[in-house]
Image (cartoon, rainbow, N blue to C red):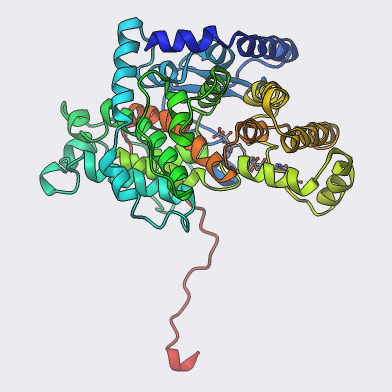
Length: 474
Ligand code: SDX
């Protein structure tokens, strides 16, 4: 497999050059930004200022990935995203996220061979083909698929497989008297356990055998095969078996179109999959972790991640960006459109981010790649969309960028790359899931090893002591 990856890089050195130039520009522009915020070992309980939407809340500690919003940095297990895009592959990055280190040649070949074998899910696809896919949102279909994989690949629904709750959940919640009236200033509204009960030795093992590295790999491969099959069945075509001579990205394109991708297309998809793989505690990762923390299994957790990613404020934005650029129509309409949108306080899709108050490093790579692919193969339509996007970016930079530090995010250019590769818009967000499933599963594995069920609080602002009134008196 490493031969396939070497081939992909050898034939696309111009793409590597674009990525390295973007890296140089990013490092030059952000060198004066403040050093990374809170990182390193923390001792619970910790103080953090929390805003609506859990803004600022720290849910757990992790080694999987780090986002520095001020500098616009993105790191996976210590490696900078620019280096990974320039030199690695999605298979290798998935291995890195799951195992915490880069694989040697044997490990990579074994991982890739296994991942490729897991692309074969004929029973699941046979069932998916019976779904009314033309009427289904492709993300809903993908979520069905994740559950059908669960049915097929695990024994989870029979009693004997259930983990013993005691050994799975080693921290009981009773130790935190939630919602008790504060007992004076010195006592917080809840108190943390003074000492943790010893973790039962078999806690991880029993936690959930259906949530191990093998399940992660099944899901990483399955998301790709399912997305490709869903696309084809919606076009009244049959699913296609993967080609053993292609990379994961190459097979995704091949299984979608039936045509072997060009080296450039294969590499562009590979870089996009690397860029979307993990991104801190974003909404879909958090959703997946919340489900996993209840000791539900990884298939249900990935289903929750897919559901959250579907939203237009999150993974669904890439598709909305193209609709927005179509609505504007051409670069000459940008100023009028923007002034009207600003007066209506309308969100400009593909811009803004909860964490980045700098240029999203992923957009720093996807922007030049959108130029590259559109100039090489883009249709007139793609060229107009790109020109409009560039004009709009300039307009936003000089207004929202200055006032509110709003810059392009990952979704702004990803859709333009996919558009130029002839991928239908309603498959853009499933492609996000095809990549993000590696980050979701890696973080689930990491979290359930030291599990604690997620249970934040809501501030009660309602009334007390209301008297019940009989129906006939209301
Ligand atoms: C992804 O979390 C992640 O890491 C997500 C992600 C990942 O890899 O997992 O990076 C992927 O989801 C990228 C974001 C894709 N979504 C969009 O492009 C949708 C458009 N963007 C916004 O809706 C918004 O920027 C969010 C949802 C991304 C972030 O919203 P926040 O952090 O809750 O910001 P906010 O709503 O508090 O806005 C702060 C201010 C507001 O103005 P005021 O009310 O203070 O005057 O900024 C404004 C907002 O109106 N604002 C925007 C804007 N985004 C924020 N104004 C215009 N256009 C925008 N896009």
